[in-house]
Every structure is written in C-alpha cells, then in structure tokens.
Length: 151
Image (cartoon, rainbow, N blue to C red; front, side, top):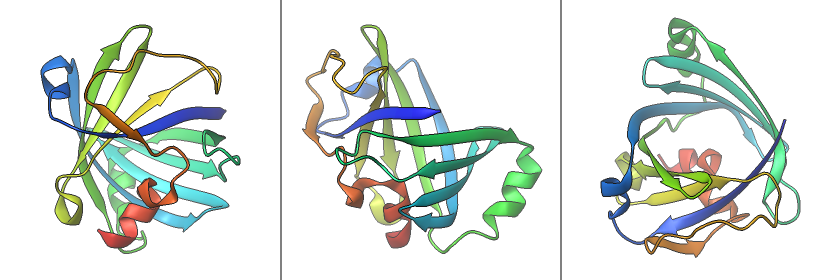
C-alpha cells in the first residue's frame, strides 16, 4: 500500500499520439490536509474512494489505500467535497516496462499537463520520452489536492 511515484510537467501534446487509452476523470476531496487526503473520484463509469498519507521527504513515496465504490455513491460523495472539483482526461502511454499517465486538466487549469509514473523502487530507472519536462515530484503545488483549491 505504499505508492512510489514521480511527477513531471509535460512540454507538448506528442504523448496523445502514443496513448493507448484515455479516460475522463472528475474528482474532489473530502479532506485535503497534507497528513491525510481523502479523495472521491469518478473515472469513466467507475467510482473510487482513496486515502493517501503524507509524502516522505523526497515526495516520492506515501501510503495509499483505494477502494472501488458504486458510481452512485461516488456522485453523492462529490456533493460533500471541499470546493474545487477537478476535471481532467488521463492518457495512458506505454514506456518500456512502465506506463506513464498524463493528466490534461480543464477549467481553471486548462493547459496544465502533468505526467506521473509509478515505480517499484524510488531509484528505479525508466525511459523518459522527449515530451517529459521538468520534474515536479514533491512540489506540493502540483498535487491534485492543492490544484483543487484553485479549481
């Protein structure tokens, strides 16, 4: 239940030609404090409830628990969330042994594109496509819970 993830800004839309899937996501936060975020998400036709703990010092690892819930419950819980619902499309791009997920944001964040890659170990190497820009792992302003405060 430990998530190891690195985040990067995306410098072009080239990734869209490499994507094997894209899914619309709507999400909100029941709690957005750094010690514990509680997220409600609708991904396509599925609902999820996710709890994340505080990141380690590098911002790479943190506790994560996720449970699929009925979409009707996810829709109802979105109504209880803090202000600032996030809407985005997630693109999945194969990259060697990994999958890079690129979120293209809408609303107040239109134009923002953030790539995430989940790893087995913090120092694990991976292929970096040309469109992968500045690393923002651990930069709280790029956490979805913080982006929701400006949505």
